Amino acid sequence: MIFRLTEEQVAIKEATREFAQQVLLPGVIDRDKNMKYPVDEVKLMSEMGYMGMLIGQEYGGMGSDTVSYAIVLEELAKVDAASAIIVSVNNSLFASGINKYGTEEQKTKYLPKIASGEWMGCFCLSEPEAGSDATHQRTTAIDKGDYYLLNGTKNWITNGGTASAQLVIAQTHPELGHKGINAFIVESSQTGVSIGPKEDKMGIRSSDTHSIMYNDVIVPKENRIGEDGFGFKLAMKILDGGRIGVASQALGIAQGAFELSCRYAKEREAFGKPIAQHQAIAFKLADMATDIEATRHLIWNAAQLKDADMDYSKAAAMAKVFASETAMKHTTEAVQIHGGYGYVREYHVERMMRDAKITQIYEGTSEMQRLVISRDIIKGNLYDPITF
Ligand code: CAA
Image (cartoon, rainbow, N blue to C red; front, side, top):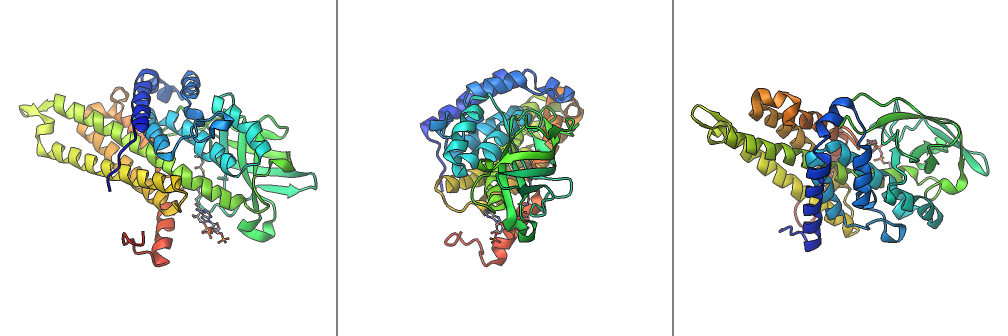
């Protein structure tokens, strides 16, 4: 199968590459070191349309196809993975679910603000005691007739400190298990919503990650997304799309580390010749290139299935687990190729190695991706091309 980008996709790729070099690169080391949120950079990403790529044009978004979206995230992450996840969460985890399953009122009220960058969005599923085991929600949204009363705590919320609107998953009917879970739009300014301190993380340090607490928050009935009890399935559908986003972020990190390693290996000499001429290094570059190519194919395959409105859960899971493990493996190799220089901030690859780690954890750990894939195998899908 040959993947060819359209002229428009090539143009988006080139424009984003230039944007990342000019806007994201100059401050990336400082933002990482000092945990500085990219305030100006996010404004400029909004102007480029990135914050609303998955929002329909009728609501002010770009209405992009998923391959274009993956390309943009890859190019942003190649330079600054933290900025890429800000875009990814805004689009995949907050906006896309409302764009597809929200009421007309919800779309008109929230999507134009998100697309323009006036508001940011976040996705609140994980809890202190429910991460991978997402059906066991402790946060409750009790039906009080005209409204729901929301109580609980959410953890590890990307964009948690900057988001004005949140997509919150909560248990409404505990006796029904996952069938009693709902999804709601909550505004961060509402009485009873409080935001914890910014997490001091290993990687993607400039993105803001917080816990969020809800204490008797009144959520209007019209803020529920979808039918009563649709919340868990909605969260899973949202995460299927999010996993293409994180896979693209991981691909960008791997591609960035690969390009820096190639450049360094051709310049740095040892034993009388560039280290790229030594097989020990040349073969590392070959393995990087091969895994990156395979990753891109998995991602674009999942993206095309999504755009064709076909089931893409397992394809997204495969893309995410392979991309994140490629990123971790090859950023580690990139540090090795750079030797001592790789261990200091100035050469970027140590940051890429730290940033890569989270792609194996958030939006479903590698173990959860393998669970999704293995359940499909056990059901009888042996991944023969005719049945795939
Ligand atoms: N699409 C639609 N429905 C789905 C689905 C999907 N992809 N996956 C599962 N479902 C449905 C099932 O069909 C089932 O419904 P029925 O009973 O009606 O058939 C229901 O959801 C429950 O599914 P399971 O029985 O498979 O549930 P499970 O408890 O075994 O869990 C899981 C499945 C895949 C492990 C899921 O819990 C999961 O993905 N966990 C990881 C959660 C996760 O990714 N968390 C990250 C949070 S976001 C984040 O990282 C924060 C951030 O800001 C970046």
